[in-house]
Length: 399
Image (tube, rainbow, N blue to C red):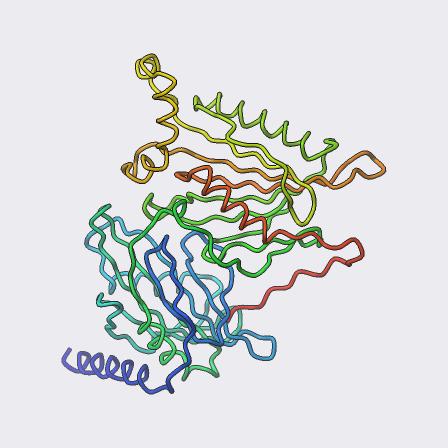
């Protein structure tokens, strides 16, 4: 038993020495992810990528000769048990890797305690074969306790690389950890959209769109879905954006928007919500004429409250929606703002028109902030020029 303890201590010492042994890296600017309450920097030669899963927050990759050679990623997930520690969660993470059918020959090379932003963390260095590619990774788990609202979050910071770059993994993790700072968590609906990420494309080359960094995104046959998790609401996406490509009989964007507005009003009635059209205007999408509506859904007031509400009181209530949303408890009903921007291309010989619809569903947002978000999302939407041939969709293979 004593020998095992000595070996563990030596492994931990070696882990820390390897972290400190690498040459100092040139780090990029610190990037904040307010919805997850964290900020960090990655090496300058790493480019931020889109993430694909709700609990993934960040991924950045270094590429050489057109191939990814190292990646830094961050995932965050809520913990519903007080007895779970960074150490036990790290062990559970290893067990999850073992059960992953894409991973073979997993070995734990070393373990160590590691502080991250003054929190106790549990680090692991492992090697494995990922779909036949020999890979080495270093991961640190650290747990954060929040008092308002009372909740616990586990942060998982990982550096992974091809086996021939094993010597770079631990030093890179150490340099990234030095930049980590924790910030106050915020509802995504209260955060202005920052830079847009890389474009995701329709496999047939009909459209492309750039999701905001920090949002997870996926492509489907009918379009794309982009969203950001609201950790203050558990694991729920409070912001969801859709890009829907369809063929329609509508002769204009205005005509199709009338159909969309009718559907929104019917849905509000079916769900016993109070729906109202906030605005309707003509705008641009991909440089072409488009139509946009902003629609708000609110819980209906109780009959007793409604009967006592004067027009002046009702107007004041609507004007104070933003303040009430920010001050409301987490489980209180929140307004939902839906922004839809539609573009219809000229009809073809069969009388059909290609339609492209951007939809933003923002829980807890104001109409003004939701419109600003839609403006930013619309910046990333593009259609090919008429003489451009559809380009095949490619994506780098992750290490």
